[in-house]
Amino acid sequence: MPIYNKLVRDCIPEVIEKTGKEFLSCILEEKEYEIELKKKLDEELKEYNEAKTNEEAVEELADILELLHAATKIHGSSFEDLEKIRKAKVEKRGGFEKRIFLIEVEDD
Image (cartoon, rainbow, N blue to C red; front, side):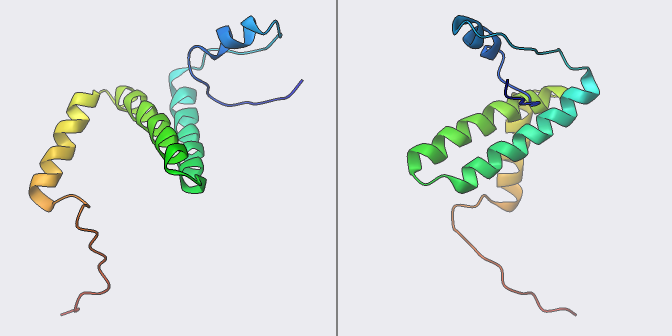
């Protein structure tokens, strides 16, 4: 039996059950959940970086977005609050659409 030891989406146990396969899972405590959520975010970011097509990249971005929704909750916030903070940062410092790459700044 393959060992995964990783956080999975909520419906994965039902998907496995429908195949008739047996599996072992558990519900994580808060601190363990936060640790595993961060690991999963690293995993999905790696998959995004390795994506070969736009379709694959967008698929991985959707996974990252879902993890961001979950992560905001563990930090006592909401995705709406996260979006407000994002917009405030765009207003104050801009976004990344102009593709500016800073090379160096004179040191006084």
